[in-house]
Image (cartoon, rainbow, N blue to C red; front, side):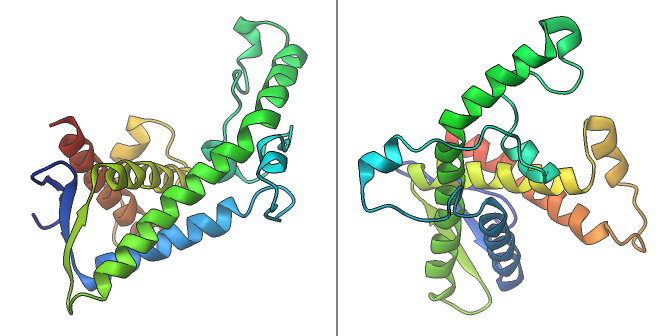
Length: 200
């Protein structure tokens, strides 16, 4: 089980993590929470209806990682060549973003919080690491968070396709990106094995 998720009886998944691995995943999840932020306005309303009808931003985020995590719904740079007028596509994307971005940010925050809380409960149970056991729902939340973390790191590493990912394996140890590359590849392995448990 070390280094990979395995299915557990009754559904869900388990993985053995040591203290360093727990610390790395937790730190990355906290950084993801900070990046996503509380959403536009930054305040939590006591009125659930106000939250339900709150409108989000209409412009894409400036940060490339956030643009990757919260992409335009209708195309992107260059898509106007084959799919109509650029102004029309921007208008559609702005309208879609206005009504969906707050919910998408909230889901990503919730996924990251599930990761942090499950790791926090795990670290209290033993020294040197332990086995993390997740329910089916927690596994799905972890899958979402792992995907977001890999997208964020991949964007910082400027990975845009498989060829870029293949080059990461050949980076010399002296390259300052090496720790991020190792985290990116390791999270990819975790994600792949977690998907496998959910498909069983």
